[in-house]
View 1: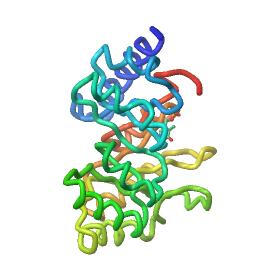
View 2 (view 1 turned 90 degrees about the horizontal axis):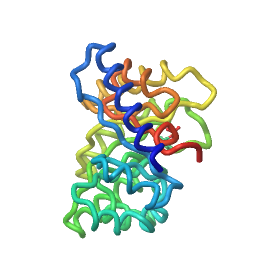
View 3 (view 1 turned 120 degrees about the vertical axis):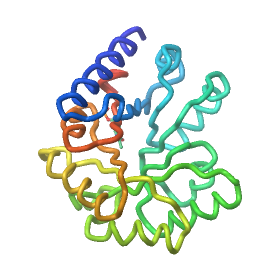
View 4 (view 1 turned 90 degrees about the vertical axis):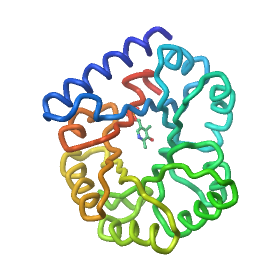
Length: 220
Ligand SMILES: *Cc1c(COP(=O)(O)O)cnc(C)c1O
């Protein structure tokens, strides 16, 4: 897997260049390396060169590989970036350090319950369905600001930022701009947006974290 190490370095260099181009602070963009579908053997080299922030989209898959890797390497920060089912809230709160896909009251309530029970509070993002795609998770853009307020006022949850996955066939720029606008309206400063195909664009639109999978680990 030496490829992943070279590709990680290349992605980091491109992030640094995109930060400069956008006149953003060096290091202001966090790289979440998306390791879904790759096993521990493929992930380990990336840990060995010092990368610590990873994203997974399925709770069950993550449970199969990350507890052992967390025991082996310190300071791992694991992000859940896939849809969150309320019957998985317990496992998600136990395993993940950041949940990026809070998108409805039922989930918010379950997460709040688990945080109280487990005494462990992952950092939280609200996922916004910026393209209003029927098959996609995320709260509708028109409801996002009110939902962030309800997370705080009704569920007692601190929301750190917003996350989106633009529609596959569309120019992502307007979706990134919409997410930035909604975050501003909601009083949030963190934006999780941009994947392998468009993370440099996302940085130009203000992404504070990008979620990059195939550009690091290869095709899935
Ligand atoms: C898979 C995935 C990514 C990474 O996608 P790549 O195109 O491989 O970089 C980012 N975000 C989410 C939510 C994903 O499911």
